[in-house]
Length: 236
Length: 294
Image (tube, rainbow over all chains, first blue to last red; front, side, top):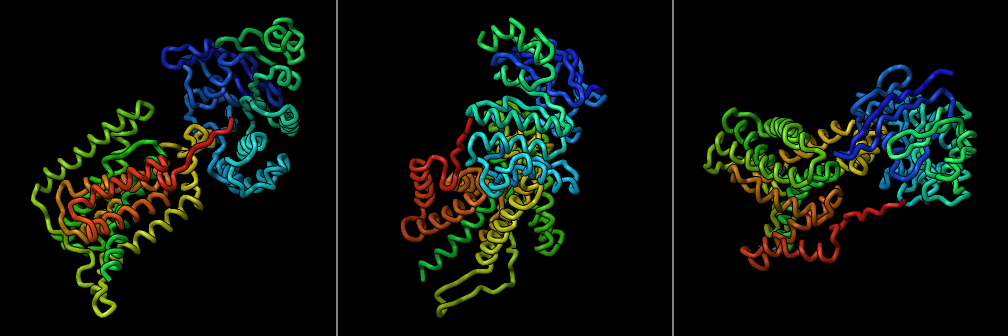
């Protein structure tokens, strides 16, 4: 199998606030791993630290056997990690196509056409709207665009932060189906979700984060059955 | 004819404002800061060109090119040394630093070049003024070239930000700095490039302005700087076409106020127009309201 990502004992602070208190976990090749937990538990902070937008004071982050803990944020994506941030954060004033081009900012030119085709195959809706200004897309389409943009760089690891946020249930199902398809096509996925039920149903393994610490871990199935998780996150 | 003559001078003055305003608006767009030292970069551009033509005997156009290079480097240095260390701190600290850089440039110029006003040699010396309509309509080469330069710069810049990879990266950083980094865009590089372009254009504006109004002293850049900042806000700060429209309108209003109302009141009228526009449309003429979808 092989480990793709190893996060070891990271501690992250926002000024005086100790947001991440010694989190360690790993992601293996081909897996869907999910981090679940309440709002403010530190899930997004963990992803931001992996992306280099935040720094850990301790520990290390290894990706494909080399440390990325000190790599500047703009060099992370060319190492093979793509991050779809919470709230999508697409470039609202740009067209769909320009957003996808930005996603391919560090992609080798001879791969761009191929990746674009792959993205349009996964998200046919985007292909119908290439010239549309991204800010005018619906919420679901914006999520698709954010994911498509992230796929333009040929990621080895795709990190998704709350892909279901604010979407109608039917769209949530669709997004999760796409996540599973991407995973079957070979992309390793690290998924952060508040929708624990959905996340656990697709995940190979899962970690529960509470106030900056990992409190539980196991396979998706195990955690879905665990009493603690059911009480806290699955509504009994 | 008086009307047409005023319109041409207005367009010409407005073109200078527009070119300066671009520097304000692009820098604001990408780093959300007001670079109040921008006006003084114009003055430095003017002096570099003045020294090279007067004391070195360089051709005016070549001197303009050297002035552009000098200001480009100056702009990059200002960002690197004064503003970058403050990135991520409060906007007040950056604002005060910008005012400090402005004074630093003015006083350095005072020290190096002295307080005496210098008479700038027009870049277009020797070219003929165009007279039309039986001599009633006059178009100076300064006006003509300033208007043309503005149009060329606007077209070039619009193509740059909409077609090139570096230009699109600048737009991406302007919209969302963090997301741009996730794409692999080097934000520092993008911001440096923006300062470089803005400052290079400031040199062009400086030489064009000094050609039309040939008095050069260390405070030469201050008032046009403020006016161009006003133009940028007028048109909608952060917007490139906004800077163009804001600059042109400001120039036209100023010249018409001078011609038809009162020379003394012209600045007051300009700023009154700004206030009215901002009351009706707080984001400026072409300013975007940012709508977020969650």
